[in-house]
Image (tube, rainbow, N blue to C red):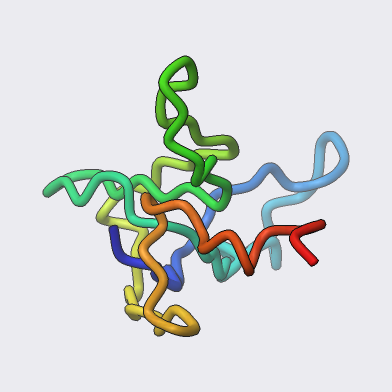
Length: 101
């Protein structure tokens, strides 16, 4: 999986209730999201910031915080370098684990 920075425009609801339309032009906010590219579809990209690295026999691969971003909203996708070239699916070396000395 690739670690990516996705820049994209999000929709939002203007704060408040009724308002005059004259002079009202809310801009879509530019959002920057970082995560592992879980799905690289033609209409939607899915990234996830949190993965369980351990491959235990009783724990399937798990993720948390997925976000699906419509392709039409994406400004850019930049692949990021992972320190040490770590693979997000492989468990860290025993020396890199907390409490390992």
